Image (cartoon, rainbow, N blue to C red; front, side, top):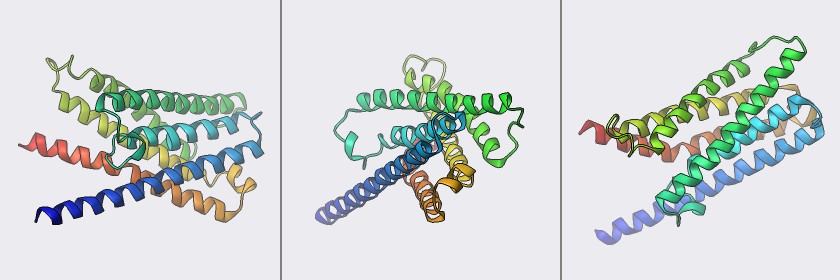
Length: 226
């Protein structure tokens, strides 16, 4: 029985590792491909920087910051939980900064050219994600200092709140990116198959990056229910 359980765990770990490698590959492909499209479009345009920074913020840094806690993530398996936490908040702070600057540049661009703000589904979803980003940063600070704040709020609540708002922020940000694939910068600079590939990869990255978070939230909810 023990040998069967051990064999099952080995197979499960191997499958986790395979899907995690696929996830990293898709993250890299989309980021490199979109960076190339931004280069073609020209980095002398503010809109190009909006696309580039938000993609790096959500699709690369936020995704990597989330999966680094996942047990199947190869490059962080040997790190202690303390080191993972340090790397996590450093990566996420840089990612959030990229997102905020990218969105701010688009707002400035629209303001300077007298264009309507938040007039599309893409921009509205992006704005909602930005609101949850702010909440996630606040919850993140509470989770980071959960031990020091335990006299006021139980650590499990601050951490659970961080997981939930962070999940909503990340998912909405990725949805906004998928919606952006219909924009002119993609339509004019690549073929339809390229847009389809990025759409499929972005959806897959969103799902695969959430596996570890869902497992953690489920575990914490079971603890609260006891």
